[in-house]
Image (tube, rainbow, N blue to C red; front, side):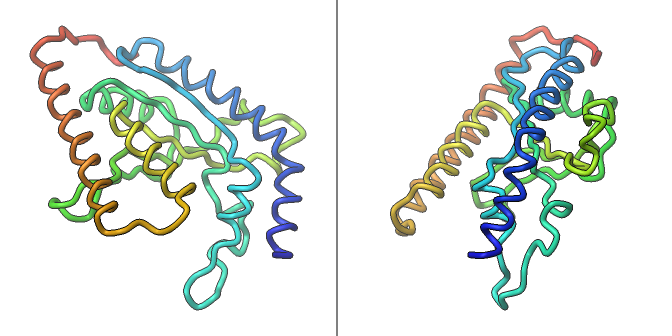
Length: 209
């Protein structure tokens, strides 16, 4: 508990700066996506002090710290999300991000088994643009930020699933886990159907800006 209090105290002293950088990052991302159609929303946020401290104090089964140096090791202190209408729109946004930003990692997240349904999304770890870092805050602003690109259905499912995980009064029963998997399958199917319809019904030949 002592380490938790120390970390949350230090992070709270940085939080105002990180919130300002996140606000500027949101505007920055939007400027590079102006010509990309069917982007529903672009948002950026600084991780809250409580969630940062909770993540920073996680330990492995043997009791060792997952993040001995959390202020440099945790890469989603500032996170951004771009939500798009259809699956094929993810590729268009990805192309714009690859064109304009430097990144160190990109992962397409999906369940390990083809027979499973759950979280889907495209994640980037991107170098923080220099012109977003205030001159007196180089030691506070993290080197990287996390960017997630998701469809509306992927976003809706993951938000609901995340909320259940954080606010559940107990662990999920087997029947409840099956219900979660069932809703994930429905979201996946809706994405597939709408993307097929969009490809046949929507005239979409706009270039990447």
